Amino acid sequence: MRHPIQLALPLAAVAGLVAALIPLPAAAEWDHSIFVTPSGPEATTWCGPATAQMAMTGYPGETDCTVPQTDIWADVVAHRVEASWDTDPAAMRWVLEDCGGHWPVISRDTREELMFLVARWMGQFNYPVPIVVGTAATAEHDHDEHWVLITGIRTDVDPTPYPPPATVNLIGVWLLDPGATVAIDPVILYKNALQWESFLQPVTKPASAYAGKFVAVIEPPQVLGRALIPGDLVLSGPVIPLERALAAARQAIERHRLAENEAFRALAEGQPLTPLLVNREQGGYYLIPYSEQGRQPATAVLINAYTGELLEAGTFQPARFLTAEEARELALRHLGREKPGKVAVEAVYLNEAGQRGMYSPTWKVKVDDQVVGVTQTGTVLPRITDEIYALAVRSKRLAGIAGTRDRLWTTDASTGEVLEVLPASGAVLRRFPLDLGRPKGLAFDGSRLWVADEQAMRIQAFDPDTGQPGRSIALEVPREKGYGSLEALAWDGRYLWTAIAAGYSSSLNQIDPQTGQIVRSLFADCDPRGLASDGERLWTLCYNGRNHPATVDERLLAPEDREVVKSRRFFKKTEGGIPSGLAFDGEFLWYTDAQSNRAVRFVTPGRRGSNDSSDE
Image (tube, rainbow, N blue to C red; front, side, top):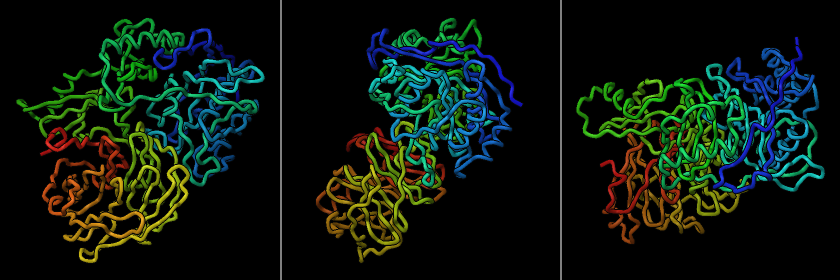
């Protein structure tokens, strides 16, 4: 049975943007927010019903209503149009309309178009907006799509007049995330525009009518316009000092008026605790918790570690944060090391399944040659990756990798698709099917994405933006070395390279991309599973069986083959049970692991004579 309830609607709970991002005068800023009662999912796949239930409590005036999640789920199952979803947009629309109002499903090709509609109609009609943040948004979600509820929005220009402005700049978004499972409470989040851009992803279900689209269920009908996201998200660089991070947090709280929201009262009434630097190498941020009157903190802001920008603010269950020294002592006690040789401690958030989020990073403690993790609750994890940066990618079986600093591609061996992955988060930006019998190996030449088809014994070029096939060449095999399987593909700036496994005769072959003919063939001297090059060096990922880590070797691409052989050196061990592929993004090497479905950025090769990256 549905019972109408009356809710207060405090407005102006969202505000501002860090001056370094976009210096806008206060008078030019527009904000709007709605009070909504948080609800968590009552079953693992019920983020949709939980989001719908929260949206109903945000109905303005006398139209408020509440519905039990069990009833909502029954309605979702009865009215779902696309079976590949847990809660598809059609079912979400039907549930909301049954409670009142007119709720069309709005899908657009770009974030900008969709977010303009969100801003315009939220401001004009005062309704919250259910939105799909991605069908592969994060490893913390163990179901196929994730719904959240936008409850507030901030732009530089009022988007509500008629006729509407052509564009507005998006500054920040308030949202309620119901959480992925019943064990995680719903959280109130404020994300700046760049953080929201990374979080909001298109639908990636190939059979869906919404594939490649950004989707929300919005009251009322649509009006054309765009909410632009200015600037770029900085993911690396010199780390700002701790004192500057604290100052940036104070300025951001005031400028965005975060403390005007009741959930963030501690940001005004409490005191900041010592900031925690997380992921120093890439995607780094300062986690700054706030505590009221000696209580354990339950609110924090995240500050970009390189620019001082506010990334987001969030609430969580009250928790004490472990210090680096406490983590060190727990790790040493666990390992039984009274007199360790060398100990390194750093806070990491790897976006892996099982890690609760950016507000609860893990301490990575490296004691000599052993690495363990220590959670914020003091639990010692006997196994944690020692790699620099790992991305959990929503796929069935990763195989191979290629890319640049801002674009990565891999293949899903189970579905036969190419996935474009965001290096900042692991989110799948887009995917396209390959009409190939058995795709193995990826290489990017700066404009074309090359994929080898082991079944047809050909190498096919594709447009990475559209997935349209281009030219193809026959795959040549060195007769004197034999053939077992094709394992990898690389581009050295002029030629393609193939890695062919054939036991002791495994080979690395330089291929003319115009004719497909072999220019030179080298013995691999290992079981090759990945290949990469920067034009001067050639790197090979050598598989050593499940009981031993794969290793990476390096050869100089000298004119004489004997010089190439002589230059070979091993310089890095990898982790993971089924590593494959190798890519050089201009600074770092990457590989994929099919066992954990991760893309791993793991080493800077450096120049000859440097031992910075060596395991030897």
